[in-house]
Length: 269
Image (cartoon, helix red, strand yellow):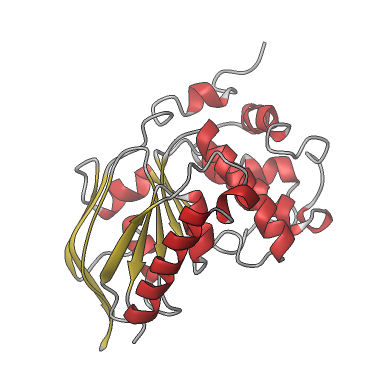
């Protein structure tokens, strides 16, 4: 018999298929005299996948940190399911930074199980919960491998598994594939699209890649240069369940991509 809570279905049942509603009203932020965000208003529905794109340095990552409660805005309010406090937001978010931040002295299974260990679960039940998912995440047979023995794509899968298994209703992903080569990046985009479909949550994805955002997200929000404001929004032209190559070469996708890129260029001026 598996240990209690070893199954991800039990661990994250409150988050699955629902996610959490996210609301930003008049959010502003600055680092001293440097204004980074200006009056951001954004509503994300429960279970929606929203992408944030904008010029480098415009404050995308800062906005993600604010959403997760790692920082507080200078003005305005951020709430998840009506909870506006930083501690309340942090309790409802799982944050995946650009670097995988795997612990080099831990095995892949122990890195994946770390989120559960941090919640107080004992080692063996936490390992059992992660082990159940390794095959589905394309990691079967690599449970005992150290991070240095894994490819870049496999490391990212372990990092995403760790993020997902935390059971939080909102996932905040900060350019998770930026460090990968083009081929691996495309493969990981397809894989993430499937993973998000299989384990639905509310997702906010920061990326500098408009094509990636349109493929993975239900809606793409374009930010201007610093101090960032929202200059455009686009609904995804295809379902994220489709194969990437077929999706991104379609006429509707190409037209939406060009409109989004034009908004990005105009917002960068």
